[in-house]
Length: 289
Image 1 (cartoon, one colour):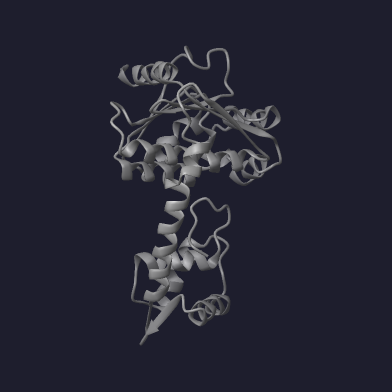
Image 2 (cartoon, rainbow, N blue to C red; image 1 turned 90 degrees about the horizontal axis):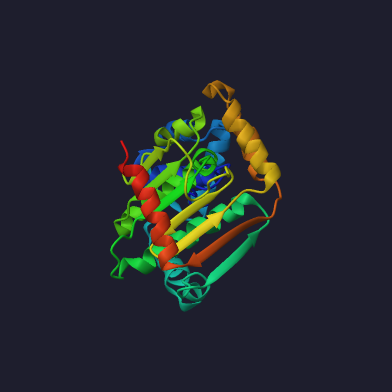
């Protein structure tokens, strides 16, 4: 029910709550108008009022005269829940033991789908970002390098949300990408976070040389590395290379491709020297005219 930017198909309840979280005191008619703009599948007025009545019955929203708002008690419980989740997943010793590695350690995670890897990737990156928040480190920004920025194109909502989350720790995110295709060039248009910086490099050297199926991100002394299963990467590569106009881009088809079952590996390494080398390489790309 809580709005989730990572959902492939947002729920009507989540869309409605997102509207009221930004615009309290709307009439039912006004909420419905905003709802139709934000809910692509559309809905009849009867279906909308059915959702509305259930949220009223569950005391998630409240009606004051002719206007609707989120129910204050529900909001307070949501805040408590959020704080508990933050403590559980961003602050506990268990999280530190599994993600915050010691210098020289490496940990490999296997996932059944590329999308599951991407979700955990974001979670682990934020865990490390919070780890460095109160640590004295000369460069706490995130640095990424790839050839095809498929995550930023096909999982743009999650990527934008990650960039916005970095603002809480005053982090900048620099991404160097190699493909000069149309879909790679539109990445900056898909990301409105002011702290997200994107540049396409002219020639692939250094990390990833001789490959095109790779993704690396460095935060502090931590190096995140992954690549797509070969058959899924083949589909992604074909999409990037063949789409010459956005009208040729079948987003729904590609979403189905990355949702297919396929073992996907993520490796996290804590290696100060290697992290510094990759970071300097990416910083060098951004310094070039």
